[in-house]
Length: 125
Image (cartoon, rainbow, N blue to C red; front, side, top):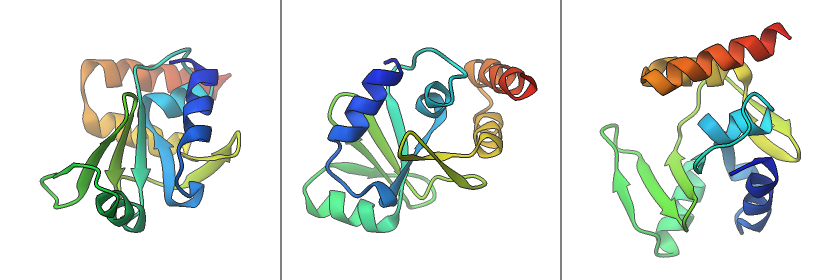
């Protein structure tokens, strides 16, 4: 998904924008640190997680007891997953650059390590 596809999907997402924030790869695309991502990961409030559950979306509980939802083909929501702060980009709440680095470092996969390098190069520009 490129930036326009992400923005279109987020615009069509029928829930309150104040209750979720863009994280991981989609945040990188919206910050212009990467061209594409496979899907859209969102952190969300407990209030939105309750609403998704009430609306019948299936979820699974993570190790910390928080919920993970799959919404359609390209959106996944993670209850309460946030590092650092939220900024607003293109009218949507997005994890801060520093929070994105912290999140990616915490995941620690090879692709996340490469993403951290891309983010740092973006900061240096």
